[in-house]
Length: 340
Image 1 (cartoon, one colour):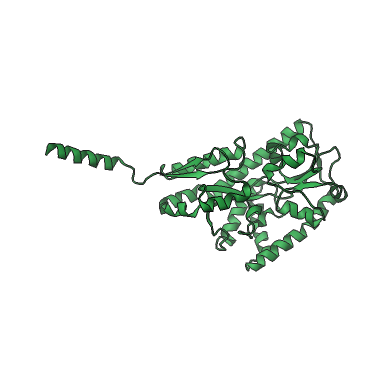
Image 2 (spheres, rainbow, N blue to C red; image 1 turned 180 degrees about the vertical axis):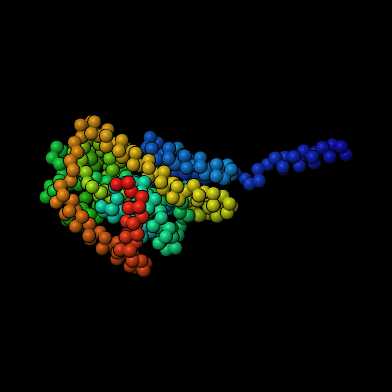
């Protein structure tokens, strides 16, 4: 009898000592290389998630990318891994409205752009079902893109630009060059070194200084043309598998969203601003020259962007969204946050 009492007492103590909720582990795959600063930003976010959920939710990181950038959303949707993010040009067929903040010549500060993007999305697009296959966690921007020459002659006029075989960042950057009649080579940003190093192109457009350095295009670069505002600032969406999300308690879902969304957007944006400034300094120190864009050249590129805005407005109209009003709202949010 005493043995049974002791046994039940020990069982009771074990139950009392057990955590109220079983630990949930979520696998996060990042396609940027391990040395890229975004890895540290996301690990800090993961630590915030664990703390916010009292360690009930833990984020584990894949040792290497488990899917290329264009396949990130489908891989998360199918459960190959639980959390991922991707550049929005790769998912425009599924989420056609979310590229509004990447239109040409809108931003120059990435933290302000990221927060303004999240706020505008929440106010105007959150109920438009852009993410049917996954649960959205955050939206953010990469640093703004510039124009790079692979020889000593700066690209500082439309005439010079049209002489070149160009690489362009997929999405709005490539779209603007097409508006001018060019046929740019496009690849994911992480693959830019291939056409640049092989001499397939004579310049590249839309990449940030940080991207040029991180993805190994900088060693082949001779001159950078700098614009008052970015050629484009690529936006990203971060998401989690819907099934895994549904299994989390409402308390943990709320806690995760509190450290994601705008807070994560600001963290990523600030990190990109710092990385871009540091990369530009390093590129200058290595001998790469910089020139300010000629006002006439900048004006011509702004005019060429008109076709890109018209295309977006047509897409927005199909969803009964006023594209001009959406962009105006983003501009207002951005101006309230930007320091310059």
